[in-house]
Image 1 (cartoon, protein in one colour):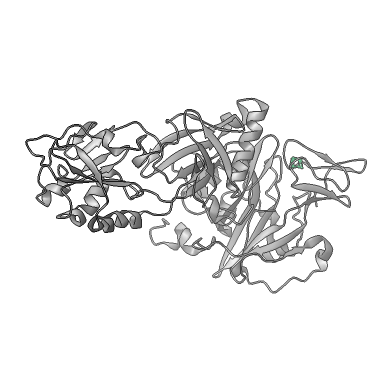
Image 2 (cartoon, rainbow, N blue to C red):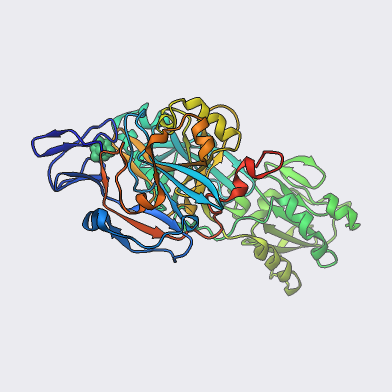
Amino acid sequence: MAEPARQGDKIRCDACPVMCYIAPGRAGACDRYANEDGNLVRVDPLVIIDKTIEAGGEVVPFLDKGPDWDGEIINPDDSFVTAIGAGTTYPDYKPAPFIVSRKVDGVDMITVVTEGIFSYCGVKVKIDTDRHLGPERSLVRVADEPVGHVTTAEYGSQMLSLGGVHHLTGGGKKEGRVTCQTMLDLCNGKAVEATIDEGSTIVIQAGAAPIVNGVREERMRVGCGSATVGMFASQWHGLVDEVVVVDDHITGVISEHQAGKVLNWQPTGIKINGRRSTPGRYFQVADPGTGWGGTNIDDPLTILGDFNPKFAKPGQSLLMVSTTGEQFAYYELDDDLKPVGRDMPARLMKSVGLIEENCEPALCTVLFMGGAGGSLRAGVTENPVKLTRSVKHALTRITCGGAPAYVWPGGGITIMSDVTQLPDNAFGYVPTPALVAPIEFTMRREDYEALGGHMKHVMLLEDARKGTRATQSDHVLAGQTSTHSKSGVPWPTERSHFGWSRKDGKP
Ligand code: SF4
């Protein structure tokens, strides 16, 4: 059994490069380890995902019960030891704190668990809104410190890239600290308020609606303006002479659009102030903003030029609507062919309602992204590159707190995980600064042996659940808690995750 170094009654935690000396009854700088009666204790409970219980099981202390605790009857197929609360071994060549074995469907499986310290990590944030949050490449700030930037927008969503090694290590001390705290809060499901240079103030929280400039976003747009015209053209046919769907990216005009042509829509002489891309599709009708369809306009008529008298007629009707259906206006042309606002006719309300109905709720999605292809691998194997190969060959499955991790193709092991799929408060930090994230590597025993695994440190799952300290660990665990995996999260050891379960050897 490894023992921590001591200085008087203080004990040294060497789970990260900070190497705190911790006095009795006190915690280390990250609050993850404490000195309890001379034991170095990982204070948060080890989280076990258990198929048989409801979420939020009780914490069972190990220290009180000790090795005599007989625990409950364990069916290994029903339990998965996550790395949450397992602790970290440092430096990296030391085997991970727990390497557990169990039979799954008759197959001898091994899971290596560790709370990885990620200096190279970030979060990717998808914010379902059309509203302009700030120009691409603008800095995102928290407490005035730069913590990331606005990156390429996606379909119906604005994207932020936050954290990363440059903000953690490349700026001032405060920048690193605030960046780490921002990532920690977002990964643990807390709300974070950020400001964007030349843009908005936004409150981000994983799984919750974004709040932009103090306004809670309700809906994600149904599509771009052109797509909206394409989707609902037949609903408008015969009810109105012209429809314009206002959008910052592609504004759609039904009489010119292919969807209108197919329905034999007649020309209306409308003129859009923007760059015509293809028939009925216009770019740059206004500047980006937080108004109609992610533009800066509150009055949609500002995007129209004069109607062409060759086609336009007095009394001609016009519906203008945004891509979420939240904004809409109805006009009729007067004798001078100028649009005049009128009450929205009941016959068109259904189609506007249909746009709203087809919009999904606006959410913030937070993906943790980290590099597990560096020294962390040495806690799994003496030959790190073999682990990388094993992951690429689908012999080793990576999970974060039991939740799936997408492994990027190419070199290294760069993973991404949806933070809402992990158990609550799965992430921690150390003041180097770096984020601490749970990571598990699961594989067959023979595959673990083949990649040069730390075989003599393998212990039975039952022993880990009883609180038995692994020989390579110098800390003890305060307790364990069982939780149900989140809805829709695949069971981490399911056979279908592994290449060997398929005829072609691929997952
Ligand atoms: S910061 Fe935390 S993990 Fe690092 S040495 Fe101190 S107590 Fe241990």
